[in-house]
Amino acid sequence: MSKPVVTPTDREETFGEEEIIVSKTDLKGRITYANDVFCRVAKFSEKETVGEPHSLVRHPDMPRCVFKLLWDRLQSGQEIFAYVKNMNAVGDYYWVFAHVTPSFGANGEIVGYHSNRRCPTPGAIAAITPVYKALLDEENKHQDRKAGMAAGGALLGSVLEEKGIDYDQLVFSL
Image (cartoon, rainbow, N blue to C red):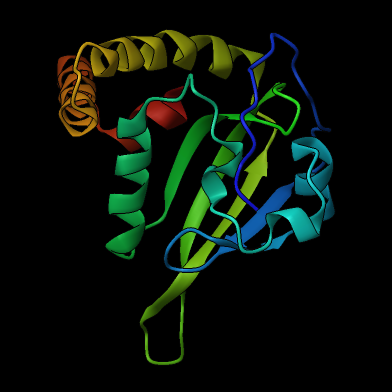
């Protein structure tokens, strides 16, 4: 299944504070497992998600440099926490506070990735939204997508340096 072209809406999809969205992927980011909350909120059946890239739910408002940071961390064997704006099958958006970890095999090698997502607080969303908008605006100034992603990453680094904190401290301060 290739991702159909979906136009983002201004409608928010929500899920309960007590619910956890869970998915697992292989090393290439293709979904190997999606729980019922993931499927309900994303408006895809499990059959429609398994084997598809996790970018199936990527919202165009998300800066690419955040995903680069995520993948760099995971591929080095580290966990990461991140606020992510996703888009479901009908174009509605939903925010998550994601905890993504590498999954390790018996010999200590990374065999895939596991993500648990909770509903973030409104205050955290309000705080991260202008940061992400600035990063995305910077990325969009560049015709070359890789150059844009690098520029967004550099801006994120500058913001963190100016605040005197690292990425994890930013995330947990929201």
